[in-house]
Length: 295
Picture 1 (cartoon, one colour):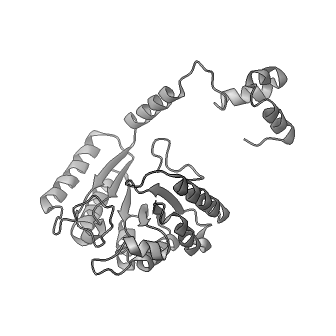
Picture 2 (cartoon, helix red, strand yellow):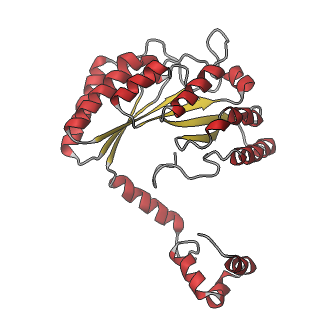
Picture 3 (cartoon, rainbow, N blue to C red):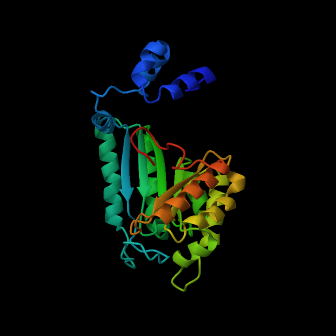
């Protein structure tokens, strides 16, 4: 809502006496009430939000499946809760059962889109054996039912190579990647390293940049702690020339073992200012997703 200076002045002068606003400027008051900027004390906004979300979920036209191709990973992050089970791979029978489930569900329900979300471990470790067969099979099913097909992949970015990006594009252009980082280059390489101790920052960053340039949706997920939070300004600078790309966004998340403290809050305040200054979209200054899913 754009406010002319006079209306802004009226709001500021009466911010602690909103009830007076109805008499001072009835039309402004009406607009604020109609657009839910002002809510009566008798209304419970939380209950209304819960009800709206429940209604939207029950009426969803998107069939969403989260698939875990493997629990294994090619990196070793200290905070990871996965067991890194080597040779843990989704079986062929499970792949067939998944495709059968999609086929059966689309016959029974009126969906407009199928969204496959791949998680891990590192899902791209099993791109050839699991991910690609599921992509091709699901695409064929969706085409038969005249249903759209989209995918999202949560990855550390190491295996998001040109070859894999090309293979994905042959199946669907509606694809997004969430690529995780743990600070600027030095901090990231201390955490996200290969079993031999070598860092992974440059590989992940370059693959993320190429994916953005090729039109894929890319979310740069920033896992922050009080030790690395300020170093993310280095990471932001590495993507500075891509700030105008609408398919790129940053998403900041505290490492779950990290306690809240004043130092962390100060670091995040500085980082928020830096991100805003570069004109990047992020979960610190923009709402993402649909009306149900915040990310």
